[in-house]
Length: 354
Image 1 (spheres, rainbow, N blue to C red):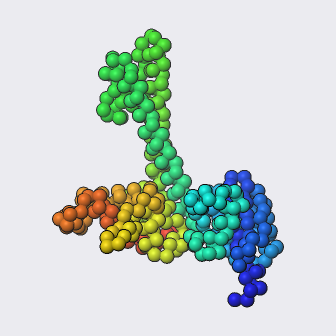
Image 2: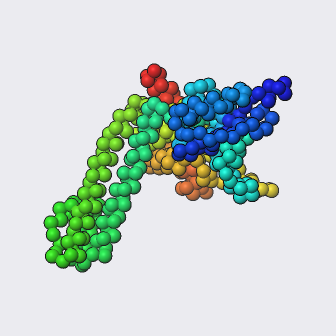
């Protein structure tokens, strides 16, 4: 390639933040051209592109946090035909040796793209899949808050006076909530009056969050049926599992070259851990833990009631595998089965939207 062309071809690296983006430009031979800060708004995105093009031809860009702080800039660059790659957080051991600053992080992002170390295409963050992500975020927080509410009720009742504990601390969650929400009075003392008020308040919170979850699940079921009509017909795949897998794949699953990429994204691909004469693989603890849990749910359901999976489980058990090891194998096979269906469903949903 002509050296002049390399000098004219630029790679952009951006360290993204809530209010300020720090951008760095490198030319084709890795020379630092310029560094500048930009505000996080539409005018700032336009300024980033204009600034970059003033030095030459912008070939590609590497951004940290394309799904969070960098989402707006990522979308703007893609709309202006710039190839954008998602850059992972810098290696911590290397960062300790050379120090940390925003320009340094931006430069590292650009260099990782220039060296073709970062080739991950960002998710599109639009359409039905993004709507499903909103619902999942709200659903998880509602479930967490509801669990905290009943745990706090039980914690108060455990240390409550004997008569109150005997009357209200029951094993059934729904019965406990019903009793606490209908409390009129526990006594005349300040202690018992305050306890009654807090138990009633927490029970009311639990009921309110339960109503929220009903609304979210109703909406989730409707959207999942529109986005994944084929996926939810698969054995063991319900609306929540289907939505989780769709969000993990993203609205543009073509960015994943093959189903092995999706398996890595879900953290169900075994990793090589061989040394010397010992050949083995180890568990992958990376990837999306929500997607991993969704696949575990499918595997568990199939192990209980799917004839094909039961037969497979019995065979692997006789070979000496534990239940957890069998589940890990099943999760990898389930990804292989479901990924083509996910791709077809997402392609169909995009055609419907357009």
